[in-house]
Amino acid sequence: MKKKTILFGIDGATWTLIDRFVQEGAMPNLKYVMEHGAKGVLMSTFPTETMAAWTSIFTGVNPGKHGMPDFRLRINGNIEIAQSRYRMVQTIWQLISKKGLRSIVINDPVTYPADVINGIMTTGLMTPPGSNYVYPTELRSEIDRVVGGYMCEPPENFYEKAIEAKSEAYAMLEEVATKQAHAALHLANNYEWDILAPIFTTSDRLQHVFFSDYEYLRKHYVLLDGFLKQFLDIANVHNANLLVVSDHGFGPIEKALYINTWLNKAGFQTMKKSAIRSLLVSQGFTVYKLKELIGKLGLSGLAFKLYRFSPRAIKDALPLGDYEDNQTDYSSSQAFSTAYHGIYLNSDLKGTEYARIRDAIMKKLTDLTDNGINVVEKLYKSEDVLWGAYSGRAPDIFVVTRLGYGMSTHLNPNVFDRLENHGVMISGSHRLEGIFAACGPDVKINSSINGVIHTWDIAPTILQLHGIQVPSYMDGKALTSIFRYDSTLSTDISQVINERQRIKEKLRTINNS
Image (tube, rainbow, N blue to C red; front, side):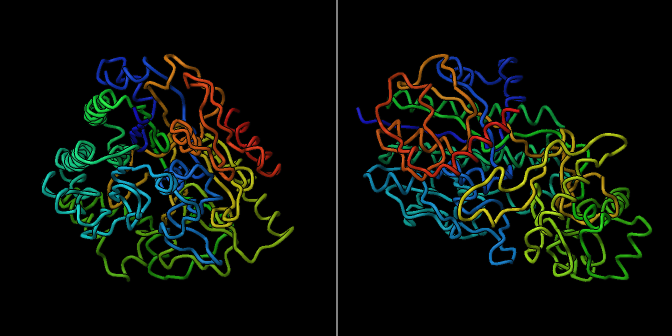
């Protein structure tokens, strides 16, 4: 029988929640996968963002090679919105197409428009509302008919509903996930495939907004576990291997470090002048206080609409937007952040001056406290965790905050404050530790996984399961310790330059520390 693999993605899934749900008997199907195969912690990328991590999962390389380290990229000295056309390495779907294998990929969150592959692809997060989301395009009407209107993302008023009615906001997430699952199941049962990859991203949206609400978390994980059962059934019919992965983990947030506010107060950043903003900020009048006032009047939805649709003058006056929204004087700033886990240095800084400024920022951040608590858990220079021709697109410093703290690029008069997005309180944020589990005919029962599992190990593992030699440029290695058989395929990793190996081993050491 021809080899088949199912890659079941749960965006932001974390063992800290899953282990508890499994113990409660709420996730019997993921428990089955773990008991009949392998389980491990999958370390995310730097930064721990969807764009960087899923692209590494799909390409087998670190973000410095694939060129998509964040939703915003530094290209030729400018900050650009990430698009899949900036991806510089082929995906596993493109590679196996050349080998004559077929893929069905549902809800690829980091690709738009859909790639032309030997198979079927629907896009996700990057898809503009109302745009075509599928290749081949002629399948759109069929998918819409089968699922009652396919959805790439929750409706635009999701955050508004999260303010006014949590149950309605949650129902939106459930509808999106259900339609994506039904689309994947329909296509899997009616079209040929060698690799089937349903990716569920509603778990990420859920945990950002509902991480402090255990019952909603449990309800959604139970829903996804039910979908997993249907894909396990397909795996059993086709004698397929099944991998369950997340792109990163999640943890609670009680406060956020407003990194651009801190950079400004520490003297590393210059803001554009606004007399109105300065007056309001000096009086402690922030968007949060505005929201509280409107909330007392029973007009919470208005706060949401103000956040999204306020005129430019109001946005410039109030701390409502990110710093790239005409708030930072980039030319005179030494550093700034447009990434939730990173800091860019001015591209004009070179040599010893660059090193001096970066070291100074890292020293001050290491010493930064909130009520006596050290907020920053770890700091990394970009060259310590990234390598490749496109590393320069990424921030120069990566920041890992301690559990309970997030990081925001938004403007705030306070260095530490609550974290809101679209006027909604954010209660959860990305963490490095994601999940990996696997079972199937080629996976040992109760198998151990040697060392750290990285996002870029998933593509080589799938290739080797299908008997395809892993390209020498890939940073990842197949997780052969979980295989039932001794692998005889060479991965050609030894041909890669020694310097890259040195940095890679350093990263593995860092993640083990």
